[in-house]
Length: 314
Image (cartoon, rainbow, N blue to C red; front, side, top):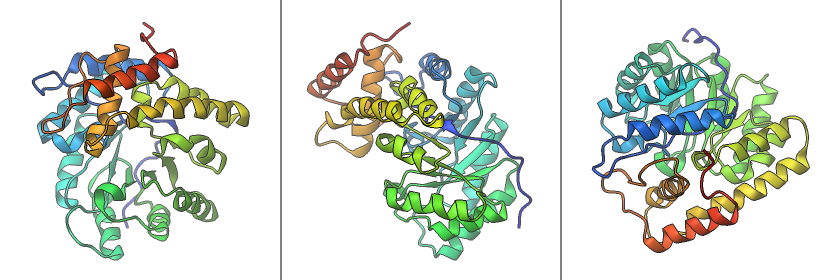
C-alpha cells in the first residue's frame, strides 16, 4: 500500500481550463493567460488543467507540458492546480504525470485504463501502481463516455480508504450513482473528496454533499457557479436554485450546434461563447475537430445577449 501523498484540498468551483488555439492550431498562450486570470478573478477555488474540456487527447506530450506551464505561471500560486494525465495504461500515465508534476501540477487525475479490457481488480491495481510512483495526490476521473467503463462505488471508496486516491472527479452523468457514492463515502468516514462534473445539477449535488464542481461552462462564465456554490454553502437554497436555472439557460449554447461530434458540440460551443465574449482571441478547435456553423454561432450569441453576457466586462 502506498504512503498517502500530502493532503491538498480541491473543493468549490474547479473549472477544467479550456485550451485557446490560434488559427494554425498552435497554442494561444496569451489568451490562455487571460483566461486563467479571468477564472481566478471570478473567484474559482482551483484549476483543472488538461481535461476533456482542455482537449488534452489532441495534444502531444510536449504541448501538454507547455499548456500546464502557462496555466501554472498565470496562476502564480493563487489556487491549487490539478492536471490530467490521460494515457492508455499505468506506465505511460506515470511518465506523463511525472512531467506534469515537474511543470507545476500539485495533483494528478487519471482514468481507468484506456483500450485495454480489465477486471475491477486490475483497475484497482492500475490506480495503486500510479499512486505509488508519484509524490502528489492522485484523483480518479470517472468518465465512462470516454473510457467505456464505470468506476465502481466500492472500488473508489476502498482506494480512498487505502490512501491511493484523494478524490473523484465524476463525469459519469449518473447522478443516482454519484449520490450513492456520496453516501458510501460518508459511511466510510469521508476518505474521498467528491467533485461533480455535471454542470446543470450543481445545486442538487451540493445539497447532498458534493465537495465541489468541475464545470466546463465556467470557461464562459465562472462567476455564476461561484455565486451558486457560495449560496449553497450558506444554506440559501432559493438563491442557489435561481442561479442554477440561469446557468442552465446559458448551458443551452451546447444545443445550438447540430450534427457534430461531442467534442465539437460541447467544447466548440464553449469556445464560440468565449470568443464572442472577448475572453479568447479565436474559437479554433484542435486539429480534425469540425468548426461550428455560422448559424450555431449566431444561436450562441443570442443566448449570451439574452443573459447580458455581451460584451464581456473588462
